[in-house]
Length: 93
Image 1: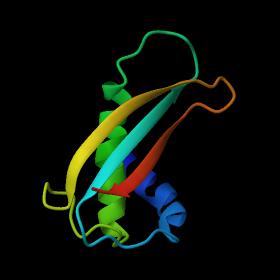
Image 2 (image 1 turned 45 degrees about the horizontal axis):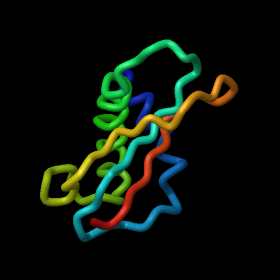
Image 3 (image 1 turned 30 degrees about the vertical axis):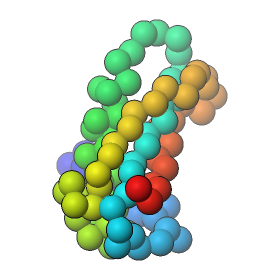
Image 4 (image 1 turned 180 degrees about the horizontal axis):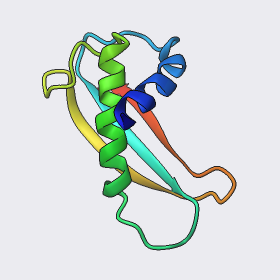
């Protein structure tokens, strides 16, 4: 249920992205709401799974296996109380 809801909400954001045929690198930059200590892989790993499924469903990626996604990076972007978020950057490897 959560995956479908996330995918449905993300699909409109993906309409203008190119379709990649070469391997890509995915970088997730996490901006926390508070200064409470957090393991950024906890939210980023779930976001990654759901985002990859949406990228495949939209046709941006053919698949999310190692042949198409050969690097995934989680980064801490700092604190943003007003707009906590996780930004995804897709780049050619």
